[in-house]
Image 1 (cartoon, helix red, strand yellow):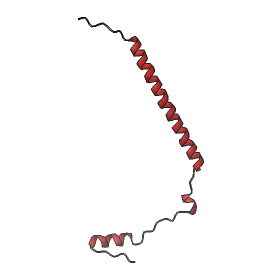
Image 2 (image 1 turned 135 degrees about the vertical axis):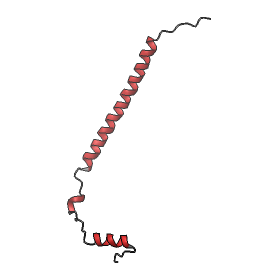
Image 3 (image 1 turned 60 degrees about the horizontal axis):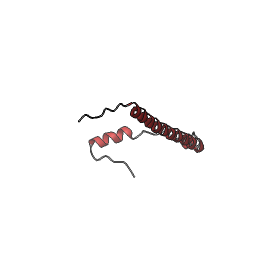
Image 4 (image 1 turned 45 degrees about the vertical axis):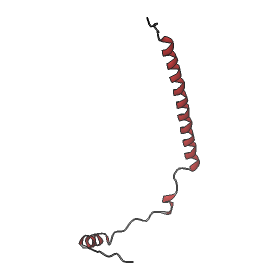
Amino acid sequence: MAVGAKDFIDKLLVEKYAKEQVDNHDDNAFDSKVSAEDMLTAMNSSADHYKNMLSLNKRLTMICYGVVAKSAKYKPIEQ
């Protein structure tokens, strides 16, 4: 299968890139540098930290609502 130009611009591009070559990757280039077990452990740890943060945020929000509710001074409405 040959590359052929259909118009002037295509012809210029074919001439420009006709002799270009790409570097072939080594066989070990596609091997993972990080083990899957380490990656899953890190992801699990991150998820645990995030769940703990959400839990603490919820508890802190409820405590703050309680403090505000206890410190509020309600005045009776005069009729």
